[in-house]
Length: 353
Ligand code: NAD
Ligand code: TYD
Image 1 (tube, rainbow, N blue to C red):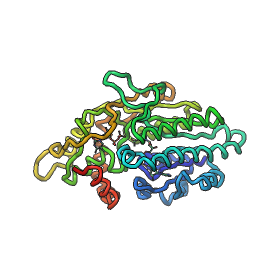
Image 2 (image 1 turned 60 degrees about the vertical axis):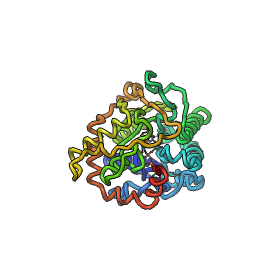
Image 3 (image 1 turned 90 degrees about the horizontal axis):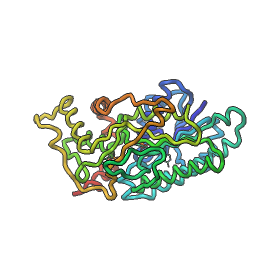
Image 4 (image 1 turned 45 degrees about the vertical axis):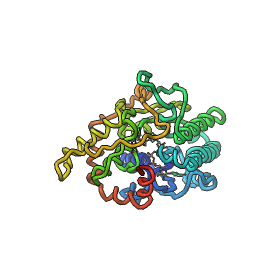
């Protein structure tokens, strides 16, 4: 079966494609617009594989998306393509509405036309898996139970609102047209190939460059962290065994405050790559202005995917973080390449005193 992966040149998509091909699961067509966050380099090792086709296009392009489905005889879609950074959505929400809402609608419509033309087992097996986030649920009070699949949607950032809109469209295409959809709502990912605008790779990059490690507000905002390969395993499992029309929450069951995440990161670096002046990396921590509308706490209940599909995270936060630090230390040229001119402009704008 050939699968269509969108946004496969980004962080999670590239990890997903690498694992899919390593496990020899079949042909992958990767559609990516190569925005600032997409990097063909992330898949350089497999670019020549006969099981891999790269298509440089936006999911907003209706004609190309429609043509792709029949040209490649697509058996399933995994939609990772998105504008994904909350802080950018605060500065410039337009691109988020375009890709995360309009793009998902175009993709759903192209998938529906293709699925309607299929017959027999090919029609029965077709799936549209939409990769979403726990941020659609909004923020939790300290004693609230973790987000479950029935928690009401209360998105607070433009990013979360566009992801929520997409989730609703995906649901509607199932309820109205019968399209066989699946949705995953995952917590904060970390691991290799994450663009250094997100907390963990940004702090790693800054630590090694002897720059301040910016922590918003009081740093006590809590996130649930999941190693990217565990998320990719969950997506594969839901694709293969998930019940059509269902949503699955995915999380690492590790809720931790931002300042504690960065302190752990510093402690690992102190051991594996100590500063030349003998000081601790934690001395670089710098509290900066808070993010507007900053959600205070996320926590994810993964009981449904665990009970129904048998999914378990393999990495703890400690083992996953150590692996991540190791990867960034071994791949400094990658960080050097992706932190080019446009990246520097973003950092100057976002972290201006
Ligand atoms: P990313 O920003 O690293 O990658 C996004 C990719 O999508 C890039 O390769 C980019 O070029 C591509 N893209 C953007 N607009 C496009 C368009 N119009 N057409 C085609 N391609 C386009 O994002 P990520 O962190 O890998 O996240 C992937 C998905 O997972 C997103 O849908 C995100 O909402 C979701 N998610 C992310 C996290 C996380 O912690 N990173 C957690 C839960 C869910
Ligand atoms: P981020 O990695 O942007 O993910 P998200 O906003 O999707 O959760 O941020 C994770 C947490 O870290 C979030 O609470 C915001 C905070 N943060 C900082 O304190 N400083 C930073 O420079 C960044 C990018 C994030």
